[in-house]
Image (tube, rainbow, N blue to C red; front, top):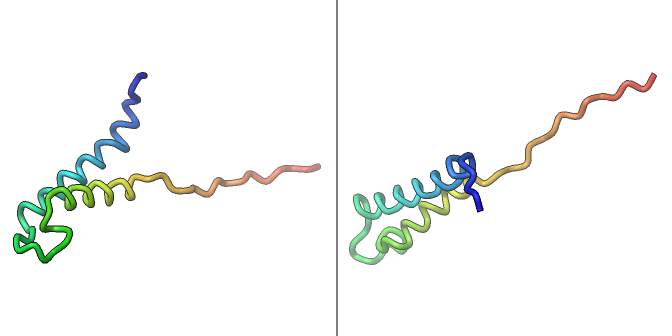
Length: 72
């Protein structure tokens, strides 16, 4: 199976970047008392960062322009 370079750049790298940012949020801002459900656990904050990035790069429907047909 050959990896598509375009797929890696547009889909995989943003999700990995989101996961890194999620972990960075835990590391720098995180709640260490355990009362914050997302930021008190590095695995959960990393997962949520990747999930948010996945939602942002997920393809959406685009409206196709329909060409009017000439019926002479």
